Image (tube, rainbow, N blue to C red; front, side):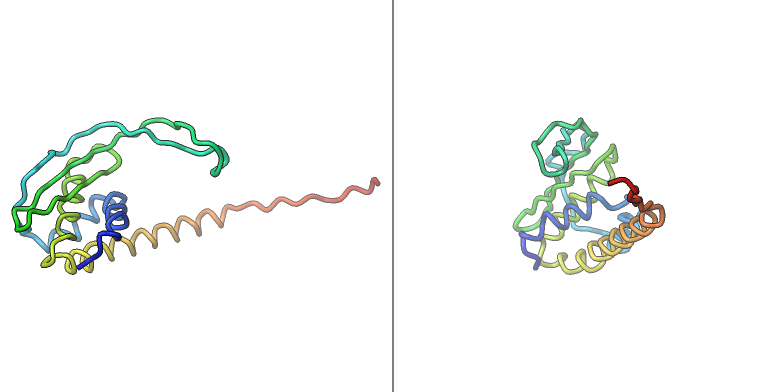
Length: 150
C-alpha cells in the first residue's frame, strides 16, 4: 500500500493530467467500487500567489477557476478521496477524487499506481521534456563586444 506521504504527489499528477488521457487510463479498470459524493463537483475560485523575482516577497497574482469534489467509497473502512483541478471540469475533479480514494484502498492502490499514476507521470515528463527542447531551440544568446575605449 502506498504511503500517505506520497499523496500530494499523486494528487498533483491527477490534477494536472489532461482529462482525455486520464479517462483513457481509467476506462479499462472500471467498474469501481461504489461511492457517494460528500461534496459533488463544484466550481469556485482560488487565489494564485507569486513571489517577487521568484524568491522575494509574496503577492496576490490573481484568481483562477477551480473545480473540487469529495467522494467517499462504500468500503470498510470508508475512504475519502479529494479532487481539485484547474478549470471547469466536473468529470476531471470526480475522477481525480475517485483515484485518490482508490489509492488509499489496499486492494486497488497498486493497480491505480501502475495503470494510472505512472503512465500519467511519464506523459507529463515527456511533455515537459518536449517543451524544454522547443524552448531551447528558440533561445537567443546575446554577447557584448568590448569597445576599444579605455
